[in-house]
Amino acid sequence: MSEKSIIQVKNLSVSYGNHQVLKNLSIDIPDNKLTAIIGPSGCGKTTLFKTFNRLIDDTDGIKVSGEVLVNGENIYGKDIEITHIRKKMGLLNQRPTPLPMSIFDNVAFGMRLQGLKDKKELAAKVEHYLRLASLWDELKDRLHAPAAALSIGQQQRLCLARGLAVEPEIILGDEPTSALDPISTQHIEQKFKELKEDYTIIMVTHILRQARRLADYIVFMYLGEIIEHGPTDEIFNNPQQKLTQDYVKGVFN
Amino acid sequence: MTNKRNSFRILADKLSGKVFLTFAVIACSLILLILAGLSFKSYPLLKHVSLFKVIGSSIWAPADGKFGLLPFILSTFLITILATVFAVPVCLLASTYIVEYASNTVRNLIMPVVDILAGIPSVIFGIWGVLVLVPFVSFLGKTFNIATEGYSILAAALVLAVMVFPVLINIFTEVLRTVPNDLRDSALSLGATKWETISKVIYRKAAAGLFAAVILGFSRALGETIAVLMVVGNSPLIPKSIFGMGYPIPALIANNYGEMMSIPMYDAALMTAALILFIIILLFNAAGRLVLIKLEKN
Ligand SMILES: Nc1ncnc2c1ncn2[C@@H]1O[C@H](COP(=O)(O)OP(=O)(O)OP(=O)(O)O)[C@@H](O)[C@H]1O
Ligand SMILES: [Mg+2]
Image 1 (cartoon, chains in turn red, cyan):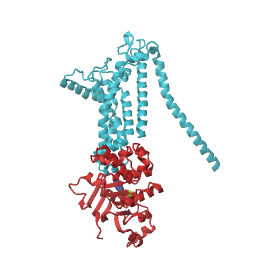
Image 2: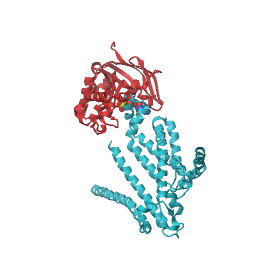
Image 3: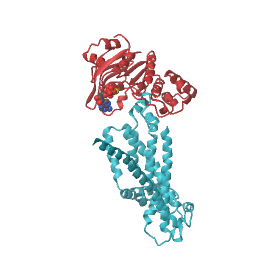
Image 4: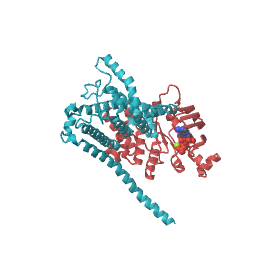
């Protein structure tokens, strides 16, 4: 593969205590593409995700070895400022997690942390990012209502807007539609399709059809190892490994 | 056979609701019964002097038939508020450390110690207060040139603060632990530092629960008797400063109930004091509940 990659994982191993969850993984995630990570439950997808923005650091008894390079910079290096790494990646969780504050403050949260104080500019940016997540028209009259009052689907799009507002390069979605109804799922999928023009998107999904619909690139994991990765077409139509074949055919449990 | 069994199940289901209701009613009416009993016992005094006069008057001279309860009410509030002011920040920071920073090993070492603290009888805290806190307050007085006997509002507040530690820490940690990890991850991934995540997101998410814990701790402090009584000096005058002596209501009742009953109205005056304490606690809890409802709406 000659394409440019944004994240390079090199010999990454992760253990919780004595339980090794990721076993010497190496992979390049292509830039400006939508990559889907698939694999059975418990194979380490979330764990891999958490190493990308070092959210894994806070876990008790965690051991990480190997390298993760983002734009060529080892994020496990010595002089790395961790908030700087995390700002590069917007995160969508399985269940939406609105911050306990108003809709406006949710979107403004990251920008305020970066020192943006000017009210006009803040309001303009909040509007911009709410529009980007197709929420502005629905919510413009109740910006100061608590975010928890929104529907689950709206909350997830708010989380997307909030993540985009810190101007990340990468969007991480850990099963971002699994708690949503079909319409809201479609909203998010549509957004992802639009956003992948400008961002690198990496998502975990259990829905193979979703991976097929959205992804340019597929990573298949099994029991803490990467079995196979490649362009979506190849993985689904012409997988090289028996395991991958079984998984994408759904003869797996 | 199955039919019989089914009808029995339905009957049991119907009955269980009624049984629970009965117990709930009994529990609630207990409050009314206590209130009625105390009012009845206070009546001999309140028939002569109005409740407001008793509350507003500061002269406590039972032999002369003067039963002003203001010094006791003030002491009660002063000690409790001060104890809460001491205890809440310490416990909040301790609980934050336990939940957000400590490793499992450290956490498993600290929590049992907190539980031991909860199991120590108040008399022991009282003795500790007399041996350690009273001299400590004297020392403070000497250092800063403030007149004090050591036995003081301040000493009582400090004892009380330590006594509510376990309650507060236990509930605070419980409440902080209910904040989902995904929320922490979200704040962190927006570029927040750990402390920004805690102070701007976690405390806010947990606000209602934390507040409920404070109410519980405060209520507990309002009624604490023995340990406070041992270090507060028990002087029935309006406290001049926190270095002066005080005499909170529970101490007044515990010290005098069943004694000097030859003095007319003495018994009724103590019951009035109990009634007032009871009403304070009820009002306080009601107010707390209102704030809680408001907080939960957010
Ligand atoms: N905090 C933790 N402490 C100990 N073990 C953990 C922890 N988190 C995850 N694990 C273990 O690591 C393994 C991988 O978990 P992970 O959450 O990464 O899987 P996953 O692929 O995301 O699964 P799912 O599809 O169900 O979300 C599992 O065996 C899990 O039990
Ligand atoms: Mg997962």
